[in-house]
Image (cartoon, rainbow, N blue to C red; front, side):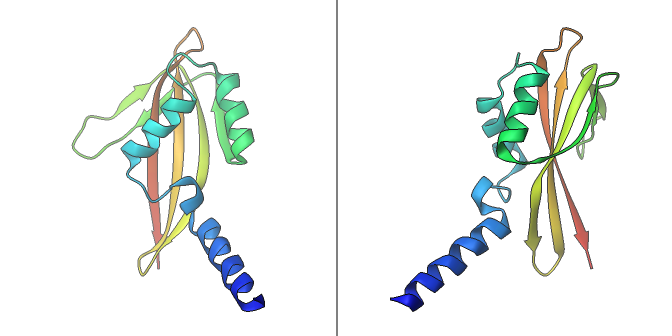
Length: 126
């Protein structure tokens, strides 16, 4: 009985550490769609900041003077919004390559309404 409990604790811990609990391994588009369900277009920065706080993610920045710079392969880079919030959603191991960080950017218009979200994944390799 004790060994089963110990195995369950290790398994749950591994899921949490790997980032599976919030789906960081999913495609960026799927993560973005999930975030849009919870922080829909038109949301205020306060709603987004409260959501980030509730999820215990790390806020990396809140600029009220500039939007975020959206860069995607094969597309022209663009600035989204006139203000933005950036948060680190977490990291996961991408063996044997390295560690992948997943960040989210929320862009707001001049009326402080959410107009776009972008998921940015970066991998640190050995």
